[in-house]
Amino acid sequence: MKTIFTLITIGFATFSYGQLSKFDLYGDVGLGINGNYSGPYEIDSVSTTNIGGSITLNYKPIKHLGIGVGAQMYKVISSMVVKEYYLPSIYVDIRPQVMIGNHKLMALIQAGKSFKRDEYDITPPQAETHGVFVGTGLGYSYKLTKFFSVFASGKAFSTRARMEVDNEKRGGKINKVGLAFSIGVEF
Image (cartoon, rainbow, N blue to C red; front, top):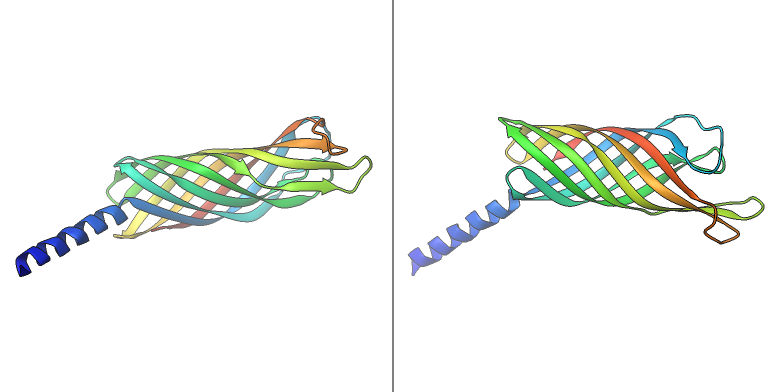
């Protein structure tokens, strides 16, 4: 009986360790660079930099692929007036990756939704509602211990917004773009 209990305990511990090793948690802080946008309005906007970050949880169903969910927050430039605001986004994350010794190279592919409604106190009343978010980039990770790595990444992202004039969706669509260069940790 003692042997069976020991075998079950070892089996459960091995299974649990195997499941934990299939998950990667990434957290980073980075420098965001706002680009101009394409849309129906012309404003004098300039590229600016800001601090932002993201967190992503990935599951590795196979050795060279991580699939998961994440959230990020970087600043974007307003479409109607010259101002910046933080834009929260959630996304599905796909990371093809290759491990060479302690080095991991990965591609970042993200698609999701941005959440923000920005209203402008002008006449007629206008607002900007954000929707689709996409991001793509590259990352590098170096394993320091069995469960801890440091990583760096660079990505380009875009979010689509719809303009509303007098509470009607008739103002057109706007694409806002940005770059993010970040450093962080991986567990």
